[in-house]
Image 1 (cartoon, helix red, strand yellow):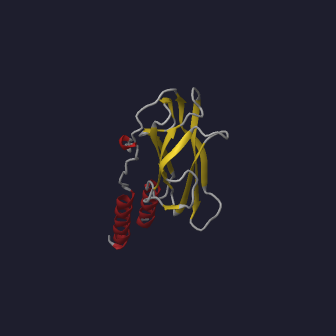
Image 2 (tube, one colour):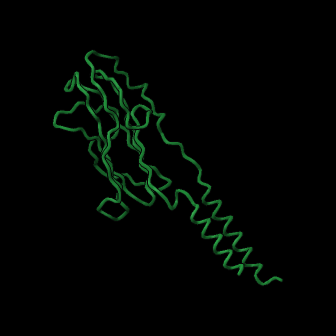
Image 3 (tube, rainbow, N blue to C red):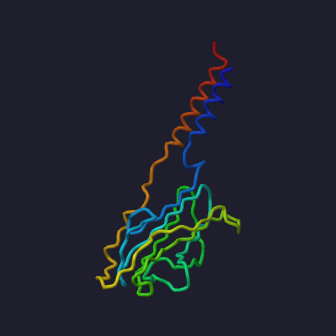
Length: 189
């Protein structure tokens, strides 16, 4: 009977283990603000940073690209990762794939609102078809006439998701110790 209790405790603890058994995390930021950001006014040449963090739930390869609707681009690439992926970034639950692009509005959509999108894809290790993918808008900015100081040294990196230590491993070890003790006491009166 004690063995049954020990097994139930172990199953409950395994079900409570966060992160290791669980979900993917896809987070994007525009100048440190979590996406989608609206109400932004940019001027031609004004730099901004886009950060993307992909955390899969298993060994994977991440792919990401900057995407704009239509043929005429509203934004120019200044530095960082390439706009179109040239290769996958290896990642897993404890090794986040980070993409960073520094972009600037140009004059092509002057006086208009231009969305900037990200397409992402996660492929499980050894697989060619995606295990997860999506397309979403990071920023929907109005491009206003006029010039601003194009200083890319002040761009925020404050958007990085906080790494939270997982209590899952500790709970699992404690559960195994409790199960072992419960099983060990089976023979004692």
